Amino acid sequence: MNISWLFIPAGLMLLAAEVNLTRRQWLVNLIALAAQYLGMFLLLTLVRPPTLAAIKLIVGWMDTLVLYITLASVGEFYTLKAPQRLSSGQIFRLLAGLFMIVFTIVFLPQIQSLFLMEGNQPLLLAAVGTMLLGLLQVSMISEPFYIILGLLTFLSGFELLYAALELSLLLEALFAGINLGLALVGAYFLVKDAEIEQP
Image (cartoon, rainbow, N blue to C red; front, side):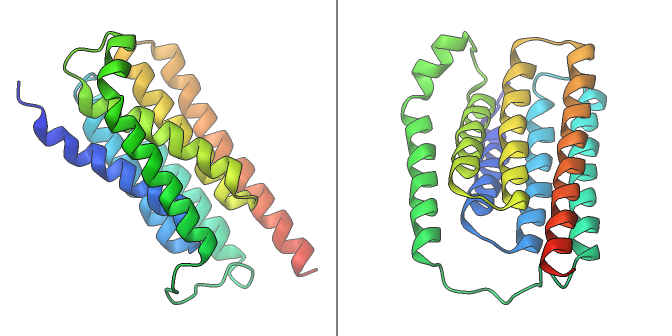
């Protein structure tokens, strides 16, 4: 089976994670998060039936919707701004993210042999790359919205990696619950911060 086309959704996931790491515009970030879950769904069809893979897509888009509704309800706090030039901090995060992606590509054969995953290079690239980018985002940004995005990105990569290794319906349900829980926790902190800023 020719799986070279699966590098497209893998690239989509990495691009979305890189956008969320670099930019600070909530609408752009939510669109990137939704695109990340679409790429995850396409990659999961390699190792899961489409119905099971669709659950990840639905849960991911529900997370995105929860965050969107929350941000829309505190619109004065997170106002939509016109695209601006990259700041020095954004350039640093962009370069750090690109370094992580290049690092993953260079060491992909060794990582593949470590996990004994023959023929799943696009999936492994997306899984390890998004995990690294998610960890990088959590460690570099302090705002609750972007920390939640980083955690969701890391969890997407971890779920993708786990799906390639083993099928457990119980853990699939647990991952779905964790995803929705993270989105709700993020919504709570967004509302709390908005109330502190605008009593």
